[in-house]
Length: 484
Image (cartoon, rainbow, N blue to C red; front, side, top):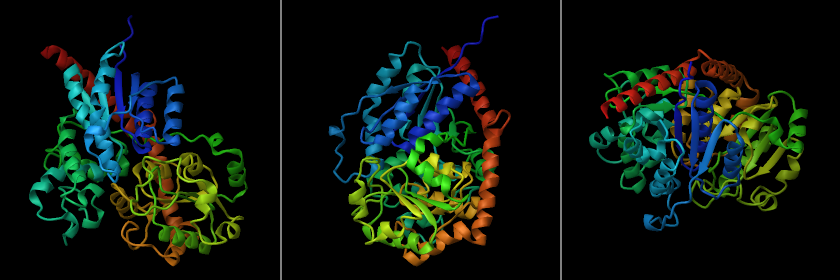
């Protein structure tokens, strides 16, 4: 009997580790668990050692084909020197469309399905050109998706700036969004970022469905609202498939000998990991307060230290892994800090293999910017968080992690709005690492770790959701062929 033909998936990732890693991991799952062939097209920013390492690793993976698209010419995009990371991402993806179209048509065998990430929605039209189903992979959570797809409605209904409202933004069937928690593009409705955001929200509806990097038990109520035609289901054009938690697998060997030896000597769950993702930066004054807070807490720590910024909190998005050397970075810390903490702390310059550190048994807390990729990596490794949101949708994520999911604590004021003092930082660190409230959060995150693992195994909700996506995809392919 002839074997059934494998479906060929083409996946497109925008620059940035928060997009690149989950897209690659999705490709691996499609191949390993669901019998696809997968080609991942990446648009590298070519400004990051970390990004280059991730792409190289994917290229050596036998499960996937990886194709690097040429860097787009942004001369016509009229980007100023201070253009926000989100605006640059949109421009890069828009200008890359001819190269992506050419790369797809040059494939030996045409793909059967197209999957793009959130910044790739303009490429959905290529799926129509090729006559294949097309999906959007939202590498974030269900509450973010609800706000995103409802934003064109809010754009029409709400007058004035969202952040000036006294009342939360109501989203049918979902937790309301406080004005201070709106995603960064919604902070200024006259800004180009906002116009791009609303436009993308309209484009996502061109897809035949949405893949979401969560699992059913994590956000059951919000997922129900997204699927209920009386709430948010009427907005969507197709199903929402939960496929998470898709994170990069840990590789203890990736830690490096010195760091691994140090971690192996520390008591179980005694080390706080401090990192602000691939792009997060902070003001020099905040860096000093964080230093004192860590020292005063008396807790062990690993700190991925990055050069402070003068203004932008996403200042390293296109420069992660190559900003500042060790000696230069230490100059931004209080005098004697490195000497006084050398027995309890390790400072890593600019970037580290985050998931490898989080997976080590000695790590018991994570002070994080709350990018969704980082949040998932913390959850699947059973590590409670101190939420320190900086930009993008991170404030929304932080509220979700603290108030709804129950795996984090956070400062009284948003770090993006106000300097958090050393005394408060000391209290936060001690709370999550050694006090009773921290033990309660730790128990909760370990429950979710088990839930996440179960979702991805055969018969689990995320496994079955991807299987359903495959079956739906086959039906769409059949209908498209029949129509032609």
